Amino acid sequence: MKETKYISYEEPINGRSFTYEQMQEVYRDLADKKEYQDFDCWFTDMLKSGVFETI
Image (cartoon, rainbow, N blue to C red; front, side, top):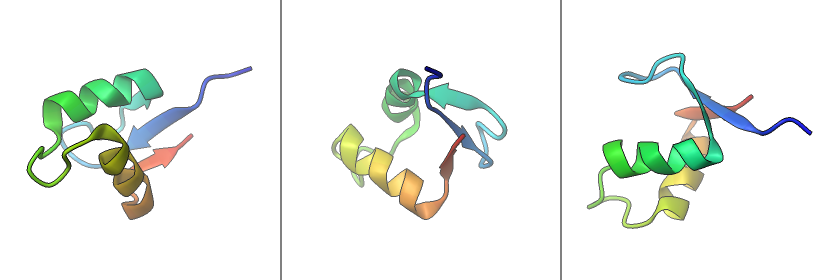
């Protein structure tokens, strides 16, 4: 079974795809922790808002 990946068309990661585990690193390195205190909240919002798409 192929692993789910997520892609963004927003800078600074435009066109790059990430596994779920790599998404946790994106959160750690790039997310605004004042707005998103935890990964699950950030991840859900990024998918709902279209910043990341499932591929």
